[in-house]
Image 1 (spheres, rainbow, N blue to C red):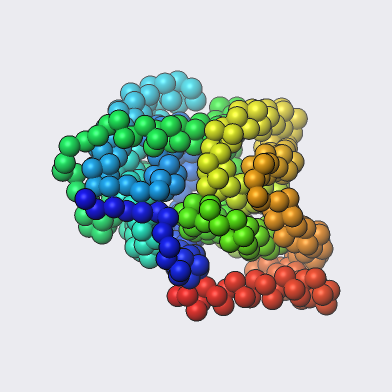
Image 2: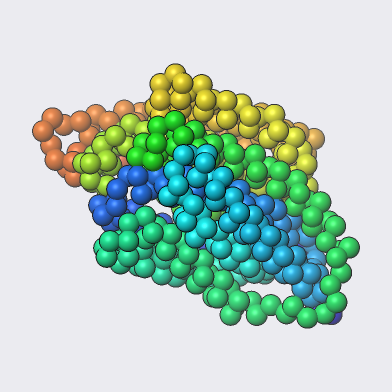
Length: 492
C-alpha cells in the first residue's frame, strides 16, 4: 500500500517551500500577464454589457462550483496521510459531486434569467454549467500535486491553460462572437487544465472504495465549505445587486474595475496560499518554525500589497485609460475605492491559512457566520447611499475593520502571537498614505497624455518609497525581504 505522508522528517522542507513559492509566483506572474493581455484586448473589442452578462451568470453558477468543491482541497491538503484506496474514493466522490452540481447549474438557467429579467442569460448559464464538472475533475488532482509539493507542475498547467483560453477568446471576439468569446475563455482553460493534470498525476481509480474513510475529509471540508460559501457571498452579492438594480452595462464597468483589482491580489495570494497552507500544515508541530513562516509571510504580503494598492489608487485615472481605453473612464474611481478592499483581501487570506493549518476551520465558520452578513449589509447600504461608488467604499472600510477580530480569533489560545501577525504590517500601513499622495500628485500634470501621467505618478511614488529607506526600520524590513527572496532563489 502506497502512503502519501504530509508530515515527515525531511530537513529540506524550508528549501522546498521557498522553491515552491518562487516557482508558483513565477507561474502566477505569467498567468497574470495573460489575464492582463485578455483584459486589455477584449475591453477594446467587446462592450461593457458583454462583461456584465457574464458577471451576472458567473455570480450564480459560481455557487454550484463552490458546492462541488465543498472545501475538499483544503481538507485533503491538511490530512497527515492518504493511501491509494482513499485517493480513489476521493476521486469518485468529487466526480459524483461535480455531475450533480453541474446539473443543478443547468437547471437553474430559467431562475437566473428571471432574477435579472434577461432571457439571454438562459443559454449562457447552460453553456457555463459544464465548467463546474471540469473543475470537479481537476480539484483532487491539484490537491494531489500540492501534497507532493509539485508546484512546478501546477504552475505550468495554470499558465498553459490560461494561454489556451485567452488565445481562443481573442480570436473568437475578433470574429464577432461577442459575449460567447468570454465563455470560450473559461471553457478552453478548464478543458486544458483537466487534461494536463490527468497526464501528470495519472490517478488510479481502481480498488474498493472506503466511503467511511471520507468522514474526516467531509467534516473538515464541510467547515471550510461554510467559510467559502459565506466568503463567496460577500464577494459576489455586490455583482447581483448592481446587475439587478443598474443593469448589465453598469455591472460591466464595475467588474472591469474589480478584475483589475484582482490581478495583483491573485498574483500574490494565489501562489502563497498554494504553498503556505501545505507548508504550515507540516509545521504545525514546530512552533518556532511556524511563527517564523507566519511573520515572513505577513511581511512580504504587507509590503507587496499595501504600497501596491496605494500607488494603484493614486494613478487610477491614467492607469485605466492606458489599459482599457478612454471609453472605460467611469471605471477609474471605482478601481481607486476598491483598492481599500484589495488590501483587506490580500492580508485576510493569511488568517485563513492559520484557521485551517491549526485545525480551527470550525471556529472560522462561526466567525464568518457573524461577519460576512455585515459585509453584505455594507453592499446594500453603500448602493442605496451613493450607487457603485458608495458600495465600493463601504465594502473596503468594513473589510479592513474586520481583519483585526479575524486574526485575533484565529490565534487565540495558540502559540502564534499578535506580534507575529500585526507588527510586520505596521510600517507598510504608515507608508501607504505618502505613496498614494505622491502617486496622485505625479499623475495629475495638466494636459499630460495618460501614458506620461501614469509614468510620472509611478516615478513619484518610487521616489517616496526610496526616501522611506532613510529610516532604519524600513531598511531592516527591506533587508529581511531581500533575505527571503535570496533564500528562495538559492532553494530553486
